[in-house]
Length: 220
Length: 239
Image (tube, rainbow over the protein chains, first blue to last red):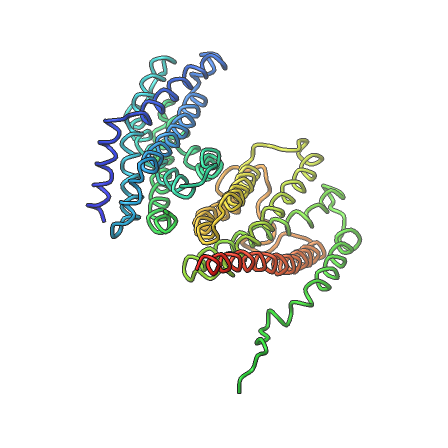
């Protein structure tokens, strides 16, 4: 299954390189949100350690939804999804492959958005190592739920409206943990940041296992 | 010997009694809550909201746990009755989560001075409410019976993760909401008559749940039969 999942992820990577519309849309969305937040609340409020991480993670969450939806839409547009599903273990491989691919693309958007936010808001970073760990685990914690909800709404006409409705409430613990881990890394609280990062890892594992166990049955 | 009589299981035997039992239990619980239970020395009469708020919250937990079990049952066996139970229980759960939030707000205004506060128990309960509204939305937008049931079952299993988070949020985080008064180490921290009233309230709400669930499952099963019947007719016409 791992080999097939990696094949799906590699195919996804190739498709992203040829037609990077999902990546471009997500990166533009994150950049626009960083700029908008500074304009709306003012740079002094936006750079507060309790505000900047929250808006960053909300932006990344929506970026993950944009990337995942675009990825599945591409499959549906040319009926490629039917060929993958017809393979033995195709559903498992599709879920795991999409998960890995979203992880990679989201990491690129997270680095870009993070650098932009740090530069534009002139953020002081007390613990760079902890910040990187929190960012990495935050990126790992989002895709399992996002892919799950996009897969659930596959072939539904109202999926653009339904995915955020389904995903946002489930992702509240991830958002809270990622925001706190990042904020405490900015403020210089190593133990607090590590505790929230640990929670992020636990959540990521729970949803990845849950997703791999039950979601493939719902992919049509 | 061949018999055409449907075997009368225990749930079928007690079913006709659910409606009158529910009405009687509701009347007894109301009388106990308004007359028999003593007035709280600190909060006064507003504390009596607890006799609606706590049973509603219990019922929401129960309903969503039943959604989870029925969802597993559907994925395991593909028997339509499990899907009917899941949707019936989810609708009742959403109704009673809404009632929990409203009753909590009515209690909070005179006690905390606000209708709503950003407190872990309130926040996680509101998130649970939105989550199951999303579950019902997902169901309503899927037309095919089997696909809808499978999608909903996955959503029902994922959403149940929030139930223990709601219940334990007051012990995990610094919360304004009071800690558990009944299910706590060292026994309940309530006056005996208050505790008895609360227990009767919980029993009354549970009977009400069983009645509503049975009625809603019947409706859903009839709808499933209609859909399956029309499908069979279409197939027969096509053949």
